[in-house]
Length: 255
Image (spheres, rainbow, N blue to C red):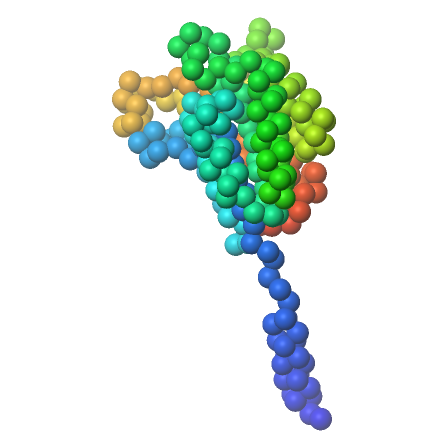
């Protein structure tokens, strides 16, 4: 047999072999949470939830479905039927990434409709876990992402202490992975420092953006750059924990 004939035969055999390799199973990654996670309307741009850039880091076998909504706590996410919609749609092998806390802990009178005491917050997280597992989906808990507030020493304040601790408690109780976004995001803001950390958040001067002619100084929500950096923290944690989902991340994640 000629060398060229052998090459052709090898190519044919390779094609026949690879044709029978099954593609990765299609899975859905469901995001539930608040405005720091959700897909924001265009008229709020450049406000961006971290779930928006997060969706672009995976191969075609992953579909990210962002069901997070602004202003929602665990309690209102359930009472409005938003969780039931997700639970009814879950399939075996799906992931559910769960990040609440900002609105649960809001005790101010104007936020009383969303406030959720810590015991109820834990019960709601436990419900998400049980019902996700009931559909053979994989729940992942995420501590609430930090606000931008520095103390007198130049370090970011830990403003979610009770609610982050509750996430860890439920994670241990139910043996669920916990991504400590509270700590990781505070470390990121500390890295930038009081002078420059605002590049992560919705900090615009008057006449700088047509959507905010009077400017905006928002220490809770991220701009596009900040949302991507927060998404990268979540992705890095997924890789660190060696979740099967990590094998489907295609874009490089910043260290």
